[in-house]
Image (cartoon, rainbow, N blue to C red):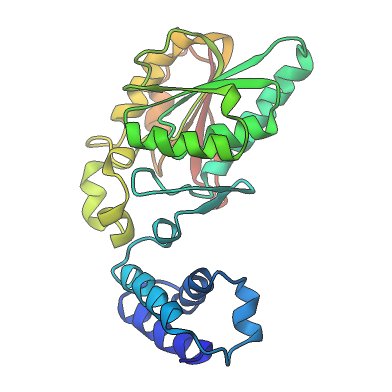
Length: 286
């Protein structure tokens, strides 16, 4: 079967399965199956797949038609200009998380300009794929980091990403719940914790509901169980004036604004995403 015929057939199959943008997804999967650039499909619509190529593509299509996320099928996702390995053991990196990374890099660079002789220190709670800390360390050579996660398998993924991006010598991993095992103080603590209310599970896309790790997504009745713990425990692990940056969910900024103790923290700032939704909580230890 030719590329053109296969794309038409596959787009229909994905459309019937409820996959958004089925033509684009079919083309991306086919390019991946053929190990070719997407431009190859456009330039060679008459190309006839070999039996092995067709079988490989059919296997990939079956997984996507079952609504398995594209990123888990290809085991990769771009984030902040870098390519990351992703598996079902970790959350798929999202563009909105880049807001947190951008702010972390900006603040660390400001701190480095004030004191170029001191090593900057960062702690990430819930490292997952490692996309946050790896991106920060890639862009702030003066920084080192410690990253924690309750999942041994997630840490394995993050370790491989740290190694592939050549910052593993500046990153230490600790397996444990939040700050368990962490004894140091840091200039900055960052986290993209679970923040979705448990009741929202039934409304999630099948790709999220059935494939992504629930422990990285859901956090109690209001979604704030883990964030509360981080806000309460972080002061013990921050240098004076240190920053806490946490990704948050829709509608949570008001509650979090009231949660932050003004005797401990500066007035909270909330950084919006491209849809003007408050996406990152930013507070500084007094």
